[in-house]
Length: 361
Image (cartoon, rainbow, N blue to C red):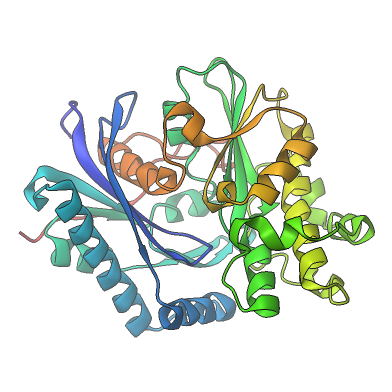
């Protein structure tokens, strides 16, 4: 690829299943990067239910994959309209797809989304299937944003930690020499969202109000923290459904106390990452939907013992980060640069990844 920065577009459909994030950045896949535009296209309840069923069953039919891909193509077109940019100006799309199954110990990870169809629908070259090469080589296949986190944190005092709280939460620790350590910390928003949906009929605990009105049941929280995942050394990663039995422990609680306990479960799981980090971070920067939850941010500050801020504190949009990361990694993929590392996924060596689909213009 051209060594000069190019326009790249990233697409992310995350474990929260709330919609498609689409981001346009200018980057060389290395130190140079600049955000250009971003939008979210929410999923309607019916499609979200179909996606949730595919995740629960770990299977998706061809019709769902095609519809998911067409929705992503629509998101691309909407973003380009907003940015007033023609498709001919965009060098690549980084297309994550949607994870419906992730079991790295079984050497399996499945993201649905048809890269060839997306290239045909948009007229822009696509890189997708980022995780398979890492998993095939023995890596965890997640998390994948650390190389991008390092780039955006280049000017910050180190060590610093970036905590992404999506459906699952993951941490990237960045040392003064650019060293990385990354892994999934535990639940993110998924359990809280599921609790809110089943108890008050809302897709999320809006503004953390449900949790803020409740009391943390520390005994039940301690039981949930006995999950063997927390004792495993990194690298390690999670499927969204790993903690699906946790809410059963809270069956006797009211909506508020259950939400409060699950919110602190996410924060306590993040704190359990500290012994696995080379040094305590000087600060934590939070990305993903979790940073919009004041109850969760308060719980993180109480449990982490260090300053905790949304990533907007350093001038980035925490909703856009993951989509931007896949745009950045698409460029790296085409340049043959690594996107996963022994310290982030446990791969035996730095590995590039992704499958390329040429544009049909």
